[in-house]
Image (cartoon, rainbow, N blue to C red):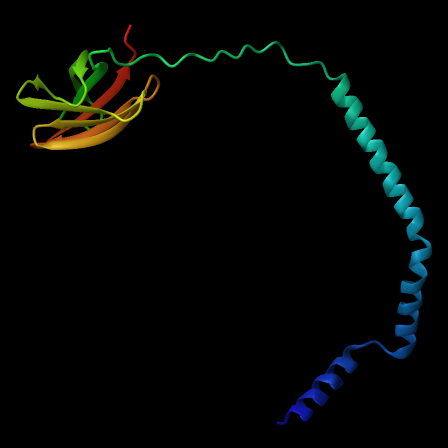
Amino acid sequence: MQDNDLDNLLRDWSNAQLPDDAQRDRILRNVLARPRRRPFRRVLVAALSGIVAVAATMLLLLTPPPAHIDIVLDCVPVVSNDDGKIRVSLIVLKQLPDSDTAVEFLEDTILLVEENSLHELALGEHRLFLWIYPLEKTLFSVDVGVDKAAETGIVAVPDRSQALHLQSNGDRFDVFVSVLPIS
């Protein structure tokens, strides 16, 4: 089929879709007659918009202010001494082998540790290792290891503790580390 034949076929099809001339004249007259009614609608819409804007403004002005809210900005605490010591809270839980929910507390202590040095702690037949790197004034990276398994986490002072999950020699451990301000 040539392009002219295709164009003629499409033109004939589109003309067949159009209404007859009498119906088209009536549609066109209705379309052309509408602008006479639109100014009234525009005035009505503008007036209603103005009324709504005034009502919203009055509502905002007449609504009582909220109760007094105190905003307290705490100063960021000092987390290390001049000698580079950092207070660390350490909680170590060992999951009991026969249960998914039962745990045994192995350690719940607060340590004064030096930054950038290795610290060891005996947990029965296991050994815990802790290394803490200061990244910023109140942000620390911690490496915690139990026996030969280790995890790295980020601890922010004073309100973000890090939960690390370790598995060593078939035992599962949950270690919670947080850095505390020096008091």
